[in-house]
Figure 1 (tube, helix red, strand yellow):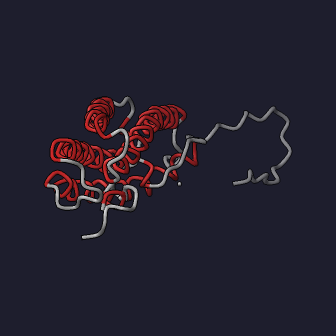
Figure 2: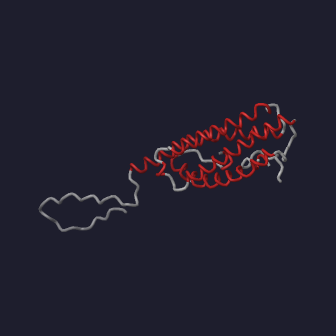
Figure 3: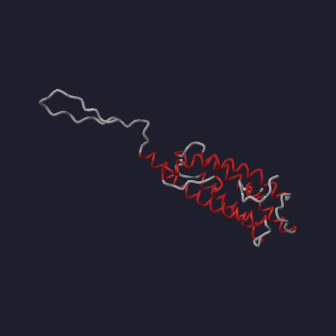
Length: 201
């Protein structure tokens, strides 16, 4: 098993851690020509309303991602603290629990996201999977931290059941995050929104 030294990969890698108009010659006529009739819009061109729905959905999702980034940063720091038996060990379980609660709230907001159907198919599904698995990993990390507090902290404790339990969901979260950013970043570039690496979420 890889050592816990690298800061949160899934968090395992941390733990173990985006036709011109044609003018034809026409015969002269004595009466005024009728104005040209505009052609109907091509079905391949998105209507203004659909473009607006997509952009609004993307902007709303970007706000959720920003919160996820903050959660991730806190978790990465806390994994390192537990791994090193750091000075904040007694507070570390509550950090993991707060992150799990925050991600649960994000899942609720994601499920009710306005205009979600305008976003690329499958994108929200993989993000949902990522956050669900991250919640499970956060809860396991909290158990790991509590064990280290209760049993006397051992640096780089790979044998703790909580730490070992976190590996599976953390790896699954990583896989989903990698898929998500591949779909999100082109959308973000289209609307001038932040792009991300998988390990920022």
